[in-house]
Amino acid sequence: MTMAEMAKALKDKALAALNGVADAFSLDGFFSSYLAKKGEINALMSKMREIPNEEKAEFGAAVNEARNEVSKAFEEKKRALEEAALAEKLKHEAIDITLPGVSYTQGRTNPFHAIIDEVTDIFLSMGFEVCEGREIETDRFNFELLNVPQDHPSRDMQDTFYFPDGRLLRTQTSGEQAHRMIEGGKGPIRMISPGKVYRHDDDDATHSHQFGQIEGLVVDKNISIANLKATLELFAKKMFGEKREIRMRSSYFPFTEPSVEVDVSCFKCGGSGCSTCKGTGWIEILGAGMVNPHVLEMCGYDPEVYSGFAFGIGIERVAMLRYGIDDIRRFYQNDVRFLKDF
Ligand code: PHE
Image 1: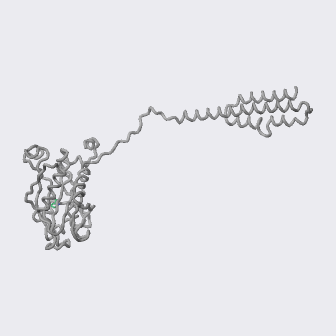
Image 2 (image 1 turned 90 degrees about the vertical axis):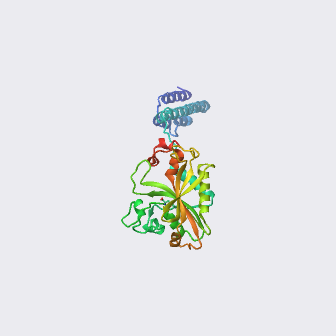
Image 3 (image 1 turned 180 degrees about the vertical axis):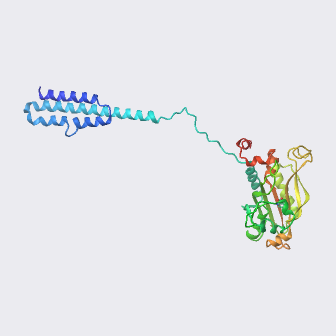
């Protein structure tokens, strides 16, 4: 065999070996055996000095050709193995796009909060501020500063949940009137304060141990019952429609004098009488009155200089009338089928 023939034989042997390579590990071994610095191809090339000069050119060309072909075949094999490995990997990591996806349902605003938002917007547009309030209250703010001393009979109607230290879950948002007057800085006040209140009540379709109120308070010089009526009339029109009218009936609250219940002309039938207004044409929506001078005094306002009015709106009551909801308990059950109706 000539040296050139030996080069060709080595090439054929290498290509045959490469054929049998089936993974990255044996490919590495193949590289070491043939193409590495100490591999067989270089070893053959080093025979150059042993052969006669006239054969050197032919031999060199033959070894180089062997190296080029084996290198090229090696690169191809390497790429093929990498592609196969990737395909194998993808096969196992494949995402099955036919599987049903995770569905994210969109939440809805509970009508309870929708009413708070709506009422808040209306009073903000009239220049009222919104006070946050608190649900755990002291006897002083829930009762005494509102003209309900210990043993006052009206406490019975608002029996509630007491803590061992005498604090309680507030029975009304009216305590926020006193907080605002005492802690909010002196001078004129126009504020509302929405939130939850608690009473020891049997739960039925129209009563709940927990419900919501929106308190309102205006204090300034020269505030009269005409201002109360104008404010609530504007509120009723914005909330229930331009054609609404209000009427005031005499009532009693310890912290307002005089006190009134405010009715709005029925927004379902327009006043002719229907099931919503129980045939009367009017729907009671809130309690209100002129701030009792004694309350002003206890809260640091001189009743000779200042006067004011207050009102309390029942949130669920307004929502039930507005949306025709038949059971107050629906507000608290978070049943999406109910919430989806709004
Ligand atoms: N706090 C009263 C209630 O719970 C409502 C009210 C608020 C009445 C403000 C007059 C003024 O029934």
